Length: 253
Image 1 (tube, rainbow, N blue to C red):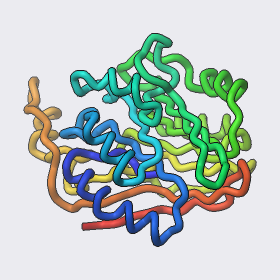
Image 2 (tube, helix red, strand yellow; image 1 turned 180 degrees about the vertical axis):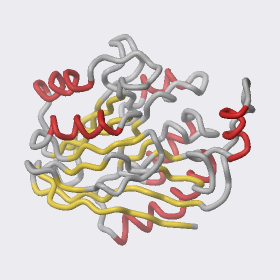
Image 3 (cartoon, rainbow, N blue to C red; image 1 turned 180 degrees about the horizontal axis):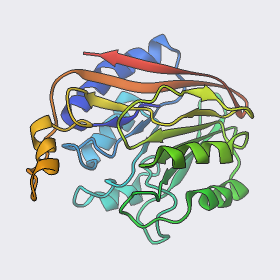
């Protein structure tokens, strides 16, 4: 899984390194969080199509910026491999999870959740939403993208689902955390995967415009930064439902 792809620099990193990672690491399945792919906010149909049909991304997860691009709701309805948080209100366009059959015959269930602590979008409880989905869906491998602000909420969800899913991987804050591990009952976990984008920045955005948000009553318009391009993600190995290994993936341009 690769973390939040930020703007054109993040897309460039994905184009450069994903084919190499798939080949060299023998990767069977790729999940990418794409909610910042279009100029730092949202994702377009063209970007999603290119990733899914050309780059070999299997599933695209999102988060609070899922619908920032005008007209993208229709594509969420059409493309089941582009998912939005499952714990958003029931009438939200698109789906919150997808089950994919791999070439080797396995079923992989990818579920997208959004946190409630410190997040502006309305959402139901991700813990109870996970219970409801897991009660009706079965798969050989189950991966959760928990897109949340609070580290505590992401870690708590990992503990809650330990042994019931293969991986709980955090996104949203764009800062990679050094706590990747296998939890006691066999679930791979990391608080934040990190981002795919420019690290000489404030979470991917140009420093001057970001600082203005803290120093002025009305901040300047955000723009995506361009320097120190790094791809961050995690590689998870599973045996059956259980994860047996998780490691950091870092590449730099």
